[in-house]
Every structure is written in C-alpha cells, then in structure tokens.
Length: 210
Length: 210
Image (cartoon, rainbow over all chains, first blue to last red; front, side, top):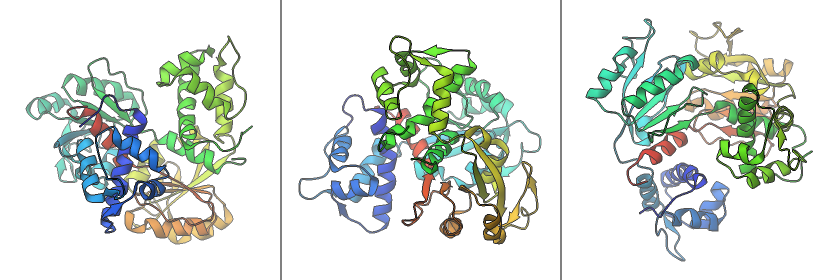
C-alpha cells in the first residue's frame, strides 16, 4: 500500500484527514469531491490528490471519494487497527487528565497500565486502572510488552524514564515533558507534544501588525 | 517587518525556530550557519533562508546567524514581548496541569485568572491564583480585558464558554476541548491542541510496513 518514503508534512496531515472524514461521516456525507474536502481543510484539491496518491489509488474521476471507505483506508494507513497498546508514566495532573478524558481507544490504542512514584498516587484507581509503582515497570513490560510509553513525568525524570522504556522494548514514546529526548539509534519513535509551540502560534496570530 | 501574507506552514515553524535557538543560546552557541541550524531541525538551509526572508533580512553571507539576535527577532515576530494576558476556563485536571506546570511567562503570557463552576474547585488556590466562579467571567473581563482564553472545560461546555469569551472581547482562544469551535467572522483566532492527531502520527510511525 505504501509507496516509498512519505514526507513528514503528509504524515502530519493524515490524522487531520481522518478527523475531517470522521466528522463528515457523522454528518451523513456519503461522498465528497477532492475540492470540497480541500475547502473544509484549507488545502487545494490537487494537494489532497497528491497526498493520497502516496498510499495508493483512492477516489474516482468525476465521483470523488466515498467518505466511509476513505476514512477506513486512512485508519488502516495510520495503523489504527493494529491493536496498539500503551502504558502511562506519571499520573500527576496531566497524566490523570489524559487517563480520564482522552479517548485512547478512538486512536486505536488500549491504555494498559499507569505508573508513578508518589505514595499519594500509587495504588489509586484512575479511569479503571490502579496506578502501579514505577519500580515495577520493567517487570510489568516483560510480562506485558507494550507499543508506546506516554511520558507525563516531571522534566527531571524524563530522560531516565525514557531510557527505561526504550530498554524495555517500546516502539514509541509520546512525550509531554518538553524535553528533547535522546533516544539513540534503536529505532524508537518519539512524538513530542509541545504546548508552547501551540501557544506561540496563537501569540503570533493575535499580535499587532500581522 | 512583515512582508505580505505568511503561509501557515512558516508560521508553525517559527516556534520551533525559537525553541531551537533558545537551546543553542543556552548551550553557549554564538553563531550558526543556516545549514547547521537546518540540520538540527530537519530542514534544508535554503528552506530556513526562505522562511526567515518572509520577515526581513537576517544573517550575513559567510557568517550565518547571530543566535542571540535571531532568537530575539523571532520572539518579536511571535509577539512574545507584547505583554499578552490569558484567563483559563476549566480548572480540572488538564487546566490544573497547565496552571501548575506550563510556563506561560516563557511564551510571553501572564495567566491572570482561572474560572470553574465546580464547588470543589472554586475558591481553591492553584499556582498562586484563586479559582473564580465562571458566572463572574464577564464582570472580570470587563475590568481586566484579556487577550486569550484557555479552554480546558468539558466538551459539553466548550462552545458556550467560547461564545462568552468572544462576546467579552478576547482576541484568541487556546482550545483543548477537541471541539471544532464556531467562532464567527469576528476575527477571533482559535488555536487547537489536538492530542489525537499527535498520537495518530506516532501510531503511523510505529506501525508495520512503514
């Protein structure tokens, strides 16, 4: 299905396609032209055709795209039906917010376990999971191999917890710590959530003289 | 300083430039070539020169960029020294995590006040601010006009709180609710933080067959 190397920009648009197609499907839209899809996403029709051509043949000349089919294809491309699993490290405010309010399953993930070191948090039940002590992380991951570690620990613990996740064989780290993690050549993928980048974009947009 | 309309992609790279230049300055780097800066950011030298040319003349042929100067220029372009202010709506787990752990001031913002409706949260002091009742929002904003509303309320309250912020004259909304807000033609800017887009990107990267 994949055709050679896909650019980072295209990869980052895929979740947006998925999100827009989900909204369209919920709104009862059965098919859509590339120009209409582009308009709702702020892209040109030709950019959409070019993006999707990285992954195969979608849509039909004169018909456009079947919304349900395209959404399912993109879900497959995104690996949403591979049964990915995650563990969360750091059940403080942010970790707890993700556990209780973020729908991992809508992205195809199962959150399997959460870890912390604070006595006030270890043993507490959150979103159906009892928080485990972080010193049992390796033992847990040996018995329950996991695809992704969600890193919501304080900055000071970020690199050492990342190292432990990598040594335990995770494939990816979802990094909320605002630290540029060193993750070696082992092929582990790191996806950073940079809140400040987002706020600074807004800062630019509301500033005088834009 | 600004030259015409700047593309969304360039705008979104500015915070990354700022972040990388901050790291370089902290590491004691005084000047850097566009190719070295590009290498550390996964961009080509010509892309960097092109990006920065949207805003004026930076750097010097054969010398490169003075790190401190370029960082300060980008901070100005991003509006980081305009004294922006923010109020936060929804002091639940996520709101509290932002209040206690996110450094608004590093992005040039002052977080002025926080609002909620839950009796367990209203009146509680978090990060130096006493959480106010949301029914005093309009009154507060009339006395203390504010640039940005940080929206960390539950989905069900998202649109109505956004409407109230807009009616009270904010210029921007930093939206964590995963709702596509309707924000009319009033010129209010909305910046969405889509956690799922980020996790789906990671899902793609760790999936079989990439």
